[in-house]
Length: 199
Image (cartoon, rainbow, N blue to C red):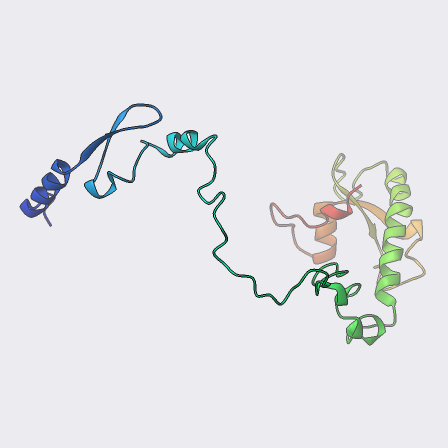
Protein backbone atom coordinates (compact mmCIF):
# COMPACT_ATOMS: atom_id res chain seq x y z
CA UNK A 1 0.00 0.00 0.00
CA UNK A 2 1.32 3.42 -0.96
CA UNK A 3 1.93 6.17 1.61
CA UNK A 4 1.13 8.81 -1.03
CA UNK A 5 -2.18 10.60 -0.44
CA UNK A 6 -4.67 9.96 -3.32
CA UNK A 7 -5.65 12.91 -5.49
CA UNK A 8 -9.33 12.86 -4.53
CA UNK A 9 -8.38 13.15 -0.82
CA UNK A 10 -6.10 16.12 -1.58
CA UNK A 11 -8.92 17.88 -3.48
CA UNK A 12 -11.38 17.30 -0.64
CA UNK A 13 -8.93 18.61 1.97
CA UNK A 14 -8.16 21.71 -0.10
CA UNK A 15 -11.90 22.43 -0.47
CA UNK A 16 -12.41 22.06 3.29
CA UNK A 17 -9.48 24.37 4.06
CA UNK A 18 -10.76 26.99 1.62
CA UNK A 19 -14.22 26.93 3.22
CA UNK A 20 -12.94 27.73 6.74
CA UNK A 21 -14.35 30.96 8.19
CA UNK A 22 -12.24 33.28 10.33
CA UNK A 23 -13.91 34.53 13.54
CA UNK A 24 -12.70 36.79 16.37
CA UNK A 25 -13.02 35.49 19.94
CA UNK A 26 -15.43 37.60 22.02
CA UNK A 27 -13.35 37.18 25.18
CA UNK A 28 -9.65 37.34 24.22
CA UNK A 29 -9.93 38.97 20.76
CA UNK A 30 -7.79 36.36 18.92
CA UNK A 31 -8.76 35.13 15.45
CA UNK A 32 -9.62 31.44 14.94
CA UNK A 33 -11.02 29.36 12.08
CA UNK A 34 -14.16 27.21 12.03
CA UNK A 35 -16.26 25.47 9.41
CA UNK A 36 -19.13 27.55 7.94
CA UNK A 37 -21.78 25.41 9.68
CA UNK A 38 -20.36 26.40 13.10
CA UNK A 39 -19.64 30.04 12.30
CA UNK A 40 -22.88 31.43 13.77
CA UNK A 41 -22.65 29.13 16.88
CA UNK A 42 -19.03 29.62 18.01
CA UNK A 43 -18.26 32.84 19.86
CA UNK A 44 -15.00 31.93 21.64
CA UNK A 45 -11.75 30.26 20.62
CA UNK A 46 -11.60 27.77 23.51
CA UNK A 47 -13.56 26.28 26.40
CA UNK A 48 -11.56 28.42 28.84
CA UNK A 49 -12.63 31.63 27.07
CA UNK A 50 -16.23 30.38 26.96
CA UNK A 51 -16.24 29.74 30.74
CA UNK A 52 -14.75 33.16 31.48
CA UNK A 53 -17.32 34.80 29.19
CA UNK A 54 -20.19 33.18 31.14
CA UNK A 55 -19.11 34.63 34.51
CA UNK A 56 -21.76 37.01 35.83
CA UNK A 57 -24.39 36.05 33.24
CA UNK A 58 -27.63 34.42 34.45
CA UNK A 59 -28.48 30.83 33.51
CA UNK A 60 -30.20 30.32 30.18
CA UNK A 61 -33.42 29.08 31.86
CA UNK A 62 -33.55 31.68 34.65
CA UNK A 63 -37.09 33.11 34.93
CA UNK A 64 -38.63 30.75 32.38
CA UNK A 65 -41.76 28.83 33.42
CA UNK A 66 -41.50 25.10 34.11
CA UNK A 67 -42.15 22.97 31.06
CA UNK A 68 -42.96 19.79 33.05
CA UNK A 69 -46.16 19.24 34.95
CA UNK A 70 -46.55 17.80 38.42
CA UNK A 71 -48.46 14.52 38.61
CA UNK A 72 -50.69 16.02 41.29
CA UNK A 73 -50.62 12.85 43.38
CA UNK A 74 -48.50 14.45 46.13
CA UNK A 75 -50.23 17.39 47.82
CA UNK A 76 -49.23 19.72 50.64
CA UNK A 77 -49.45 18.04 54.05
CA UNK A 78 -48.96 14.47 52.76
CA UNK A 79 -46.25 12.32 54.42
CA UNK A 80 -43.56 11.01 52.05
CA UNK A 81 -43.22 7.23 51.73
CA UNK A 82 -39.60 7.22 52.95
CA UNK A 83 -40.03 9.38 56.08
CA UNK A 84 -38.20 7.79 59.03
CA UNK A 85 -36.25 5.31 56.89
CA UNK A 86 -32.46 5.32 57.22
CA UNK A 87 -31.46 3.75 53.92
CA UNK A 88 -32.30 0.80 51.77
CA UNK A 89 -30.75 -1.86 54.08
CA UNK A 90 -32.79 -1.20 57.22
CA UNK A 91 -34.10 -4.77 57.36
CA UNK A 92 -30.67 -6.46 57.13
CA UNK A 93 -28.83 -4.95 60.09
CA UNK A 94 -26.44 -7.17 62.01
CA UNK A 95 -25.27 -10.51 60.64
CA UNK A 96 -25.67 -11.04 56.92
CA UNK A 97 -27.27 -14.49 57.12
CA UNK A 98 -28.24 -15.12 60.75
CA UNK A 99 -30.08 -18.33 59.81
CA UNK A 100 -26.71 -19.88 58.72
CA UNK A 101 -24.35 -18.39 61.31
CA UNK A 102 -23.03 -19.77 64.59
CA UNK A 103 -24.34 -23.19 65.58
CA UNK A 104 -26.64 -23.28 62.51
CA UNK A 105 -23.66 -23.20 60.13
CA UNK A 106 -22.62 -26.32 58.27
CA UNK A 107 -19.00 -25.64 59.29
CA UNK A 108 -19.77 -25.38 63.03
CA UNK A 109 -17.35 -27.41 65.19
CA UNK A 110 -18.78 -26.72 68.60
CA UNK A 111 -16.97 -23.41 69.17
CA UNK A 112 -13.46 -24.91 68.80
CA UNK A 113 -12.28 -22.40 66.20
CA UNK A 114 -13.03 -19.39 68.34
CA UNK A 115 -11.32 -20.87 71.41
CA UNK A 116 -8.28 -21.80 69.31
CA UNK A 117 -7.98 -18.21 68.02
CA UNK A 118 -8.23 -16.82 71.54
CA UNK A 119 -5.50 -19.18 72.77
CA UNK A 120 -3.20 -18.33 69.85
CA UNK A 121 -3.53 -14.60 70.47
CA UNK A 122 -2.92 -15.12 74.21
CA UNK A 123 0.16 -17.21 73.37
CA UNK A 124 1.51 -14.50 71.02
CA UNK A 125 1.04 -11.77 73.66
CA UNK A 126 2.57 -13.68 76.58
CA UNK A 127 4.63 -16.83 76.05
CA UNK A 128 6.21 -15.96 72.69
CA UNK A 129 7.84 -12.84 74.19
CA UNK A 130 9.29 -14.90 77.05
CA UNK A 131 10.63 -17.49 74.58
CA UNK A 132 12.36 -14.78 72.51
CA UNK A 133 13.97 -13.27 75.63
CA UNK A 134 15.06 -16.70 76.89
CA UNK A 135 16.72 -17.48 73.52
CA UNK A 136 18.24 -13.95 73.35
CA UNK A 137 16.37 -13.17 70.08
CA UNK A 138 18.49 -15.72 68.19
CA UNK A 139 17.29 -18.46 65.82
CA UNK A 140 17.95 -21.84 67.45
CA UNK A 141 18.70 -23.56 64.12
CA UNK A 142 20.78 -21.14 62.03
CA UNK A 143 21.80 -18.60 64.72
CA UNK A 144 20.35 -15.59 62.84
CA UNK A 145 19.88 -12.35 64.78
CA UNK A 146 17.65 -9.39 63.86
CA UNK A 147 15.11 -11.35 61.81
CA UNK A 148 11.34 -11.71 62.11
CA UNK A 149 11.08 -14.40 64.75
CA UNK A 150 8.40 -16.99 65.46
CA UNK A 151 7.91 -19.02 68.59
CA UNK A 152 7.88 -22.59 67.24
CA UNK A 153 6.30 -25.50 69.09
CA UNK A 154 8.53 -28.59 69.11
CA UNK A 155 5.47 -30.80 69.71
CA UNK A 156 2.88 -29.27 67.35
CA UNK A 157 0.13 -26.94 68.63
CA UNK A 158 -2.59 -29.25 67.31
CA UNK A 159 -1.08 -32.47 68.73
CA UNK A 160 -0.85 -31.70 72.46
CA UNK A 161 -3.12 -29.08 74.07
CA UNK A 162 -1.38 -29.35 77.46
CA UNK A 163 2.04 -28.36 76.06
CA UNK A 164 0.79 -25.28 74.15
CA UNK A 165 1.87 -22.86 76.89
CA UNK A 166 4.86 -24.89 78.11
CA UNK A 167 8.13 -22.92 77.72
CA UNK A 168 10.19 -26.11 77.35
CA UNK A 169 8.13 -27.04 74.26
CA UNK A 170 8.92 -23.72 72.49
CA UNK A 171 11.95 -22.36 70.67
CA UNK A 172 12.80 -19.20 68.71
CA UNK A 173 13.07 -19.63 64.93
CA UNK A 174 13.52 -17.17 62.09
CA UNK A 175 10.96 -17.24 59.26
CA UNK A 176 13.02 -19.34 56.78
CA UNK A 177 13.86 -21.96 59.43
CA UNK A 178 10.27 -22.06 60.70
CA UNK A 179 9.07 -22.57 57.09
CA UNK A 180 11.62 -25.39 56.65
CA UNK A 181 10.51 -27.11 59.88
CA UNK A 182 6.78 -26.69 59.12
CA UNK A 183 6.68 -27.61 55.40
CA UNK A 184 9.93 -29.57 54.95
CA UNK A 185 11.26 -27.36 52.13
CA UNK A 186 13.00 -24.01 51.68
CA UNK A 187 10.94 -20.83 51.81
CA UNK A 188 10.35 -19.37 48.31
CA UNK A 189 11.95 -15.98 47.61
CA UNK A 190 9.70 -12.95 48.23
CA UNK A 191 7.33 -15.09 50.32
CA UNK A 192 5.05 -13.21 52.76
CA UNK A 193 4.46 -16.29 54.89
CA UNK A 194 4.45 -15.63 58.62
CA UNK A 195 4.87 -11.86 58.47
CA UNK A 196 1.65 -11.27 60.43
CA UNK A 197 3.11 -13.24 63.35
CA UNK A 198 6.32 -11.25 63.79
CA UNK A 199 7.22 -9.38 66.98
